[in-house]
Image 1 (cartoon, rainbow, N blue to C red):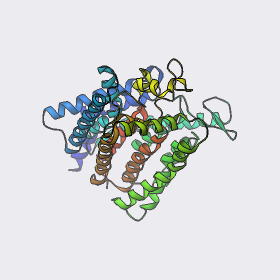
Image 2: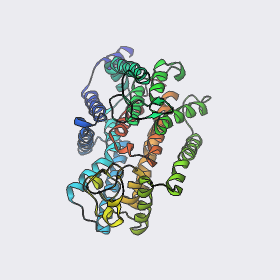
Image 3: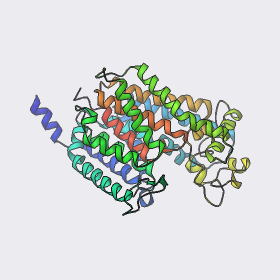
Image 4: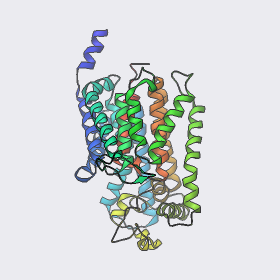
Length: 404
């Protein structure tokens, strides 16, 4: 029996190759530039995988639930486009739908492909390369602080944040945390693992609240479950969610009570207005807060006068137009869309709870997913390449039940 398990681990099957390909696409996409659209390629591949398994009748229950909810979400989005009457082309709607569905599509596809040996196989294939990458990153992080190299975006109290060559520190931090999920020793105490501390140093070196949030929630969850070696109770998850809300509260207060110009406040306020105007639907795909609404300037922005605001203009810098995922969710999909998105999120958490993961895996999966959602009050990382990469890793870990 043991020899059969060892043979299974040594054999690299086609499913593992597909997962490895998705991981590479998403990791490269975090670099932006030439590779910036590879996460959309990964999303299309994930959609094809889910569709093929559905056609042959082998789509697992978790993946089937995700696909049914996404289909409902897409229908609600189309209904929002119809009732709002905001003019958008079919291609804009399709691309926007792919971007927002991408994290769940990838989670569903990888969950479908993975088995209890997948993580072990990926560790064997990627473990050494990941560790070397993290050590090199740590070395350059030190050189960056010593001002021997310049790999920073900004300086805070004489400390230089570290982005390596990823263009933005938080993207790099999420990549580091995702890689740690692959090499993490599921049986060993987290704080006794050297690469946990290496990853923590790299994440903290980003000097971004969003990055620190991941580590904080992970450590807090480990502390709250110290006496519970396996299953994490719903009560503990609620405590973590409450803590997440408290952490985000200063940002929320700042958005609605600051006397200074804040594009995120503008987006959030605008999304609530659209929520009321089109209740129970929203404005629809590619109309507000999304990358496609920014790229192909939405008529709503003209109506709201956003074209006169810094970072939200028609012909110039549009960097702030898609910088708040929750504003996109509220404004584009309204009450019905929010309910479906919550159902999708609950389904993911439910996956972790029914997978009989050990403590390390449980704490990692739940804390990373909660954090990935929570930081989107001030970002759009959930639907970006780093968010999709994290969802891919979480799906792999949720099937890793060989070690309890």
